[in-house]
Image (cartoon, rainbow, N blue to C red):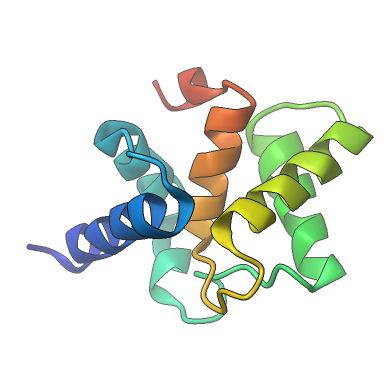
Length: 113
């Protein structure tokens, strides 16, 4: 297996074990590929749930630019709910997992078709 395939298996395990979600492996793979080389960098591959700057990046670069959502309080609430679901005390919150959960939350799977 490639390094990316190994990471996808790790992300799927996090979704199942930490979030209680059985992942759609096709969608998970597409979200992973969409993040490009950032998944291999220790800093950019994770999201700090307590860093307002980091959460703003998720909101602006993913929800607004990638998914095409309008800026609103609903975006902040969805990010907060996703961080809560993943577990605030969990130190390693993978960006792919956060983006996957947000994609499902907003029913934007078609972006990855």
